[in-house]
Figure 1 (tube, one colour):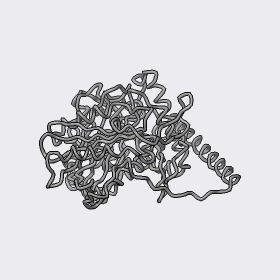
Figure 2: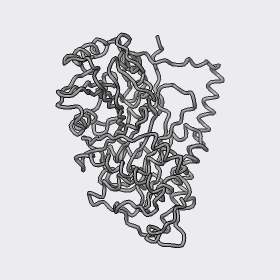
Figure 3: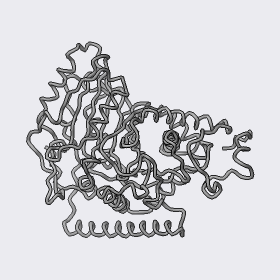
Figure 4: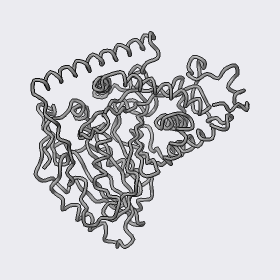
Length: 497
């Protein structure tokens, strides 16, 4: 048996302490599957019955949070779980009706997990018609970061049909590498030294952010709480709007190589244009760039431990350019400023910085005054690698996996991408206090990506009016177009990009 986790890391505790009924801290996966060819009408009912037989869960799916005066201290295992709470069955008209499915998942996603039980739920969703069904599974973020959760979810899927060896994810024991024990005195002083180094770097990060706020050092990370207010930011309340979409990942990779940009930077550009178009429908105009919260993976290569090892820091996006290529160049420079700052610091220092600024945002949220201040960012975008080959759950083919995350204090849109085979499956969620639906966003993302592809050869291409007000164009741009006005640039035959 694998030894149960007893301690909870500092960052993991943060996800517990910052959770509220209005803003739960679980993450989720929406999986679309296809029934086997020989499946009868009772197949999913039998499958659900089989799932409910697994009442003994493995770590961490059997672990309950123990706390003292509301402060989490450790995880403790339970011998059996309440299977009727953790595993549920639902019937809808048609799983392939995305709008209907999204509304159901949004309702599941807005509710908080029971704090006196292991922090996860598994929902089997059956359609009255069609051969597809869905699985929605949510788990508390304190159990692990995105990389950890993807690894756990994949454990239940195989690259071939396997009717006999099937086990659901909560019944599969997660493997852990045994750490070599250091001498207690040496380990103690090593921990103290690492802490002091991280603390020094954390203070240095704060100092450089202060210099940025004073306009002494402008080439550094954005100052927190200087983001752009939109109808999607502000006080997070109950209720969620949710949608999903897909992109061809080989096309994204090919474009990233062609434009000498990372995959993240390509996606940031397309999402930035898409969000602008969506907000323009509501009459939103902006005189500065939107900002994204960018998760940074702090794991070393080969680190497969559980828990969270991430930092989330703001990155400025693009403003003042209708040429999608020039918007991309702005984002590349802004993104790499943050990456360079992260590489020069101790990994834990950026975790401390994340907790520091998010804690301030949480205080605003708890006091219900988030709307009084500028947000840290407008959108949170992250991507994770998934399985490269086709996968099966028992004898059911997995068609798509859409990650759905939580919402940071201060609101905004959370966009998470997971690659499956040659496809990027994208889950998008926000608070629905001002918008009823996000169903237009997938179309805008697709069109932005296609436009960016075409702009490599055709310099006359431009995005439509996306609600940007340009006060001082030359001062706001990172990438300059020399010697001529942008309108002239549109009509030129210059293809030097």
